[in-house]
Image 1 (cartoon, rainbow, N blue to C red):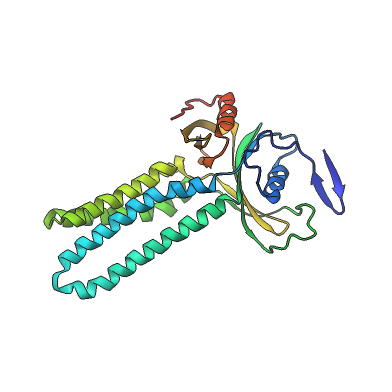
Image 2 (tube, one colour; image 1 turned 45 degrees about the vertical axis):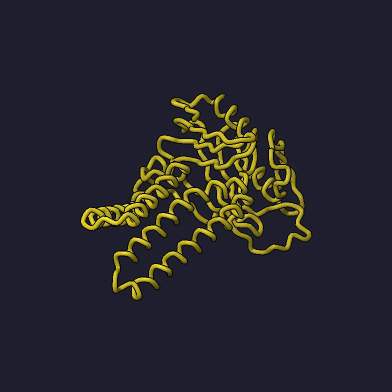
Length: 291
């Protein structure tokens, strides 16, 4: 049902059947409701747990940074008389990586607080507020004026073109370091290299970001809604081939919804996860798996 309010069309939709995060910001609730297509019913809606996002980031970051530190210690030990010239570069590298890690720990949870996960009768989607033109909400009654800004298709070819160079560089460095360790073994260099690789693989495992096109993010549409920049990633149930669940405590879980050709939707650190899993089970996608 729709009605006109002033000059702007505003759709009245049924509220979320399940909303775990009672403190979800009003803008986010309204954006989710306004995203629904005619006749589409919202059956589950929640936000990721920002604190659990931090907890999920820390292990891989600690392993990776520890490995880098051990590797630098080994390089210093092998530098001999060149330690004075090598030390500033290694310190700069460690500081740079530490800053990147700190920024990730700060901004990823902030992004989680601007994100909503939703299941409808037709599809699953993630809605995220990317930025704001203003922070003045005085006088705002509702959001309006949705207009498309861009569409990021993220085809398999685009995925490989954007990711393959980094993977090749990492593989080249890994082979080079491996050869160096064999020729001139140093326990710190070997341990550091092993920790760096372990941290890299742990990050891949946590987010299922394997370097294969089927694990890529789905297409993303970006809109301007009132004074907000909003992105939408969605997958229709008809395209789902399987889903995986990694359950946590207190009804939390990471839910990975996989499709044949449209990538994978990652509902990381989802709250009220059992309700979402039950809804997905009703669709009975082939090869559905819970771990």
